[in-house]
Structures are given as structure tokens and as C-alpha cells.
Amino acid sequence: MIKTIAELNAVKEAAAEVVKTRVNCEDAGVKDVLICGGTGCDSSGSKKIVEFLKEEIAKAGLQDKVNVITTGCFGLCALGPIMIVYPEGTFYAKASVEKIPEIVEEHLKNGNPVKKYLYDETVDGDNIKSLNETAFYAKQQRVALRNCGVIDPENINEYIARDGYQALYKVLTTMSQDDVVNCLLDSGLRGRGGAGFPTGRKWQLAKDLVKDADQKYVCCNADEGDPGAFMDRSVLEGDPHALIEAMAIAGYTIGANQGYVYVRAEYPIAVRRLQKAIDQAEEQGLLGDNIFGTNFSFRLGLRLGAGAFVCGEETALMTSIEGNRGEPRPRPPFPAVKGLFDKPTVLNNVETYANIPQIILKGAEWHASMGTEKSKGTKVFAVGGKINNTGLVEVPMGTTLRTVIEEIGGGIPNGKKFKAAQTGGPSGGCIPPEHLDIPIDYDNLIAIGSMMGSGGLIVMDEDNCMVDIAKFFLEFTVDESCGKCTPCRIGTKRMYEMLDQITKGKATMEDLDKLEKLCYYIKDNALCGLGQTAPNPVLSTLRYFKDEYIAHVQDKTCPAHVCKDLMKVTIIADQCKGCSLCSRKCPVGAISGEIKSPFTIDQDKCIKCGVCIDTCKFKAIVKA
Image 1: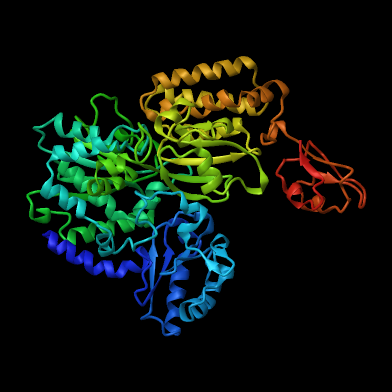
Image 2 (image 1 turned 120 degrees about the vertical axis):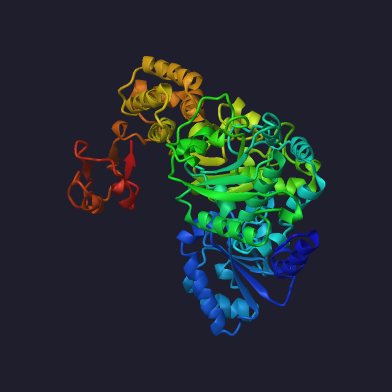
């Protein structure tokens, strides 16, 4: 049990010896092999790699000289499973069981990194760079992700070695509730889950508006329902104690003794590690009664969600925690007055909480020194889609979209042109090439018709149809609407139907006007953020890519050759060699012809599956 700062520091000093090989790249006489155990790498077989690596290390008699640590996400998911060897910091990409024996023999035993298995950007002749010197990591500034890929998330001592629970001790023993609020206000921290409401202001309201409440609550939104988003999941998997410490600080600040983390059941690794972290914190006295010998007590519980997107809205989330169907409530009253179980409640998402211990320890000025005038600190983005380096990126607010996509993300694959980036998921908008150099912050994104959201960033190239993209997000929204209010339940369905007609070439120009009017009606009248922001993908694509809508409506063509009803697959006679391979591969028998003569496609039979295009070695088959 840890009750004093001396006891906490004793654990810190002992554990610091364990992690210094990784954190400071100091040679402590042993090597640390860190293997990503996040969801992405786990699905690619990292668990088998860990087991086999330990067996090979034992065979080589190196068990006293090599430590194997399963971590959270390193960020560069495109190269997983990732394996890093310290103190060198050598970066093995796309690790596999087949590569392990050679790595153990040559690198771990003889000290010679196996260059052919290293991430190619880290190899420069005889010089081998660490992962921090790569383009992906060099321009990042990790705050929320500071421990992800560095510590064993299932070992509380390693978190303590990285100043863990020092902020909680500082708050409980040297700061008043107002001191904490003022620190957060001065830091400029805004909520990382959506609209960007000032965190200090939210906590201040929950603290002050109902002073005589017999019970208050602290909640965490770890539901993260945006397609392609996995920022919060990665923090839970890689650094769960940061969330626990921050929620305890929130409890002290507003006068709450109970907290709940609402996390989707589809995150089994995150759920398991978070529960283990809660158990460890309770065992050490860092959760429970009289924390650090003070009169402050705080407990934390998990509540699993069933994957409803609407439960990312704060009142719907609280309704679900209460055991009811997740539906939003009218506001006001706001949760600071009447939240969970009708008691004053503060709710933030995982990334917001992950920033707080560092702000308490390093000060408001430190955090405010990063970012832009109105958007302070860093932001984590889950970068996916048509980009070389998919993964997690944390950069200072104000970093341009071009920097994230071209420099950190490695650009667009296959020499394709950038077309748009979708930020904010189904609630956000599509950003065109002319805004690539806009500094990313809350206000700039809203000004160009998008939003920060939780931090999903989907990159699209010239092969994407923007009408089809809008239709995709609307289909998601229709499926996820809780149905409580008419504008969302019916309006989003009508929007989807209009988009479907456009992609089939059955709409008119008048339909485009109706679509836009309906968008604004839904924004103004829907009950919660899901419905209010559902039109954003449509409005932003109408704003920046209206020529594509017009092409679908007037010309009955899809410029990107994506919408099947407006597309046909043809064979270029001059390039066809008559090999018949396409005919043999066609699943519906739509291709016919004579050997060594040009083949033809029966458009009535063709289902536009693209198998023939992928099969043709002479690039004689194209979409038109």
C-alpha cells in the first residue's frame, strides 16, 4: 500500500532502473525487446511472436540478458507487428515467427542487428537509426501517447516509474479544488472528444453549480464509435493508469467519490488491461478510501457498451450506464447539474483525461506553449485510408494537414493524387486540396465545414467518389440513429435515399437543392449531436465537390468510376492480346471472344466486380 510520497518515490526509483533501458536508451546490461500488443498488432499475430521469442531466448540461454515486454500501440500500424530492441532502439517492422530465430541469434546474442528485417527508413548504410529519427515520429510530440509503446501497461510500477500518480499526490496534498480548475483553465485544454469545450470550465461548473449535492460522478467516454478511430482504445491498451489517475483528480476537483468508464465491449484488450489497472491501483491504495492518507476517497467501475454510436453523446452514454436504452436527453439541464442518476456529473473522453496528469506536473504554461491561440496542446489522430503510414499520430495543434499527410503519413500510395481528407468521422466534413496547408485546430476546421471530432482522419485519393463517400457516412448514421427524434430518424433516411438516387443517375438538379435544404433543417432541429452533425459530410462535399454531384445528375456519369449504376467496364481492343484469362476469371460469364483476338464484355451481364481488371496483365480493361 502506498500512503506517502516517500513510498511512491521508492517504487518510482526501483522501477526507473527497469525502464531506463527504453526511456533513456541506457545500456543497463540487458536488452529490452518491446513488442506491440495493441489490437492491430495482436490481430496480426504479435501474441504468437511473443511466446515464440521467449522460447528462442530460453534456448539461447539469454533469459537473464533479454527482457520481453508486451506494450501498447507504437503508432505506425502499417508496419505491424512492430518489435523494438533497446537500448539501441532498432525497429523491426512486420515481425513474424519465421524471422525470430535469426534475430535472436544475430542481434540478441551476437549484437548484430538483422538489417534486412529492419524498417527500411532506419537503415542508412552501416548506420542504423532509432524509431524516433524516422519521418513518422520526428515531427510528433507525444503527451497523451507518451507511455504507449514504452511501458508494460499491465505493470503499475512501470507507470509509476514515469511519474505516475505524482500528479494525484500533488493535487491531494498541495492544491485546492479551485487551484486545479484554474490550472486547467490557464492551460487552455479543450475536450478532445468532439466540440472542444474548455475542460477547466466543465469541471468548474460541475464543482460549483450544485454545491450541496449528496453525490457527484466522474464519467469517461471510451465508446469511440467513429469509423476508423482508435485513439482512445490505444491509450487504454497502452497506458490505462493515466486515465485512472486523471479521473481521480477530476473526482477530487468536483467533489465526487465514484467514477465510471464507459467502454465498448468490442475492445476486449482495452477492457482487460483497464480492469487489471484498476485492480492494481486498489491494491496499492491509489484508489479506494483515504488515498495518500487524505480524507479523499474514490472508486472506479467499468461499464461495457454494446457498440451504439449514439452513446458517444454524453446524455445517451449516461442513460446507458443507468441500465436503460442509450438515448439522448434534452439539454438543459446539462450534466453538470443533472447528469448520471440525476446527479451532477463531469464527463470527458480518454484523450482529454490522458493530458491532465502532465498538465498538473508540468504546469499550465507548459501546455499552453503548444498549439495555437485558441487550441492549446497536442491532438491525436487515427490516420487511415489512402495513405502509406496508417496509424496513430500526435502533433501540436496548428500542424498543417499537409504535414500530417505528406511528411508523417508518407503521402498517397501508388502515385495517386490527394483528393480529400475526412476529419471528425460521420460528424465531420471532407477537406479538399486547397485547404491542405490550413493549421489544424478546432476553429479552422469548423470554418471550412469540418470539425475535429474525436480525431479520425481518413485520406482519399482520385479514385474516391465524393458522392459515394457522403452516402457511406449517411448509411452509417441512419443505422446508428437511436430514433428518438423525427429530424434524425426520418431526415437522415431521406438524405440517404436522395444520395442513393444521385449515385444511380436518377436525380435532378432540383433534388440537389432539396438535399441541401434538408441538411440545414436537420442541423437546426435534431435533438443531439448525432443528428445535428449528420449532414456535415453532405454539406462539405456539396461545397467543395459540387461538380461531381452535377456530373452524376446531368451527365449520368461518375467521374471516379465508383458508382456502379453509372459505370461500365470495357476492353480496349488495341491492347487486348486475346489471352482469355479475363473470360476464365469472370464470375458471371460476361466476357467472350476468340483466342488471339480482342474479347468483349456483355454489359447486360457484367456486375462490375473488377475481377477482370485485376486479372488483365496488359491493362486492356478499364472502367468508363
